[in-house]
Image (cartoon, rainbow, N blue to C red; front, side):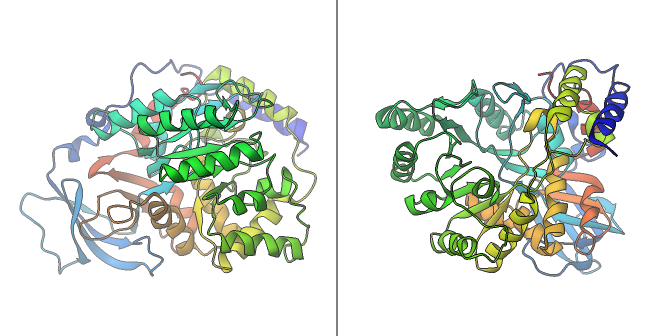
Length: 456
């Protein structure tokens, strides 16, 4: 269908959904949003379940998993695991249990199409992340640092329902940046002062943004490493090769900025010499790439469209009509380079950039799209699940307590109907989510978020 016709049809659809939704009145309560039947259970046993443990190992059939409090107490073949007294038993025949997703390019805001301002998403996004099994996020930059910080504290104290949050600083950028939320760097001392401040406030990584100068990025990396904290970046004014040679830890959006925005001069052929040299440089310098394989040019699904506030839907539709898909096959080339990077020994973590692009990328919904698209690129389902769970946890340094399924690990779990180890699309069939041993019903969480995204 022609783009204008698709946009018109989408506008007609979006204008008919969720008109009766009102604004949210409170943040999601950890106690009130939990599944009532399991809320007060001290022990829960999952029986006859397929276990995909997040390590990349083959799935194990007909397993039993015992949760006591916020930890996994026991795991093994069903029938060989004795159920503790007074345990609540769930028969999960035909279901799979996967580690809670650990996604590393996430946000808690919704960006306007213009890119110059954003709306907080601290009411709807925590619900939507949990509803899709995302139990840990790194914020990868923020326009609302104290919203993020205080939300993290409330989730950590058990008051608010949401994923564990790892805080990234506000965006460090240059004077050409149109965003009203960015930290515009004046000079090296200004940069270091701001970095020390955010580190003292509890932020554990720094984000450089597109318009940062080479000199400022070099100073940012130096200061961050002095503080023993990592730096990631969405590049434009600095090339991927230059950033790697400066010692950057992480690059966002895979090879996308290296193809579209920077002066790396990559060729259309993934096997071209400049492409292969960049891959070697990134691997040798141990730069981790955050893949964000979502399609911002396709219209939202009906389910995702219902999540937007009516005014946000209207702005999204108008923005979609104005947005132009890339004229060169950048997404395909980016996927090919990402796969080649992984096969050369490069480390990849996963995210989806929720909040991006005027409503085109919705928390949770986009995270599942990113997982599906990794398999479409050429990664295997079990490999993709490992990237979205254990590899993300390892990057954050929390792999000893979450990111995989094992005795003594935190009960951060995603239960889906089907077998995503063989059919990755089954990751969408979420029936229950545990975070720190508390069980949530995704349908309830999604229902309470409808019509709220872009309102807050």
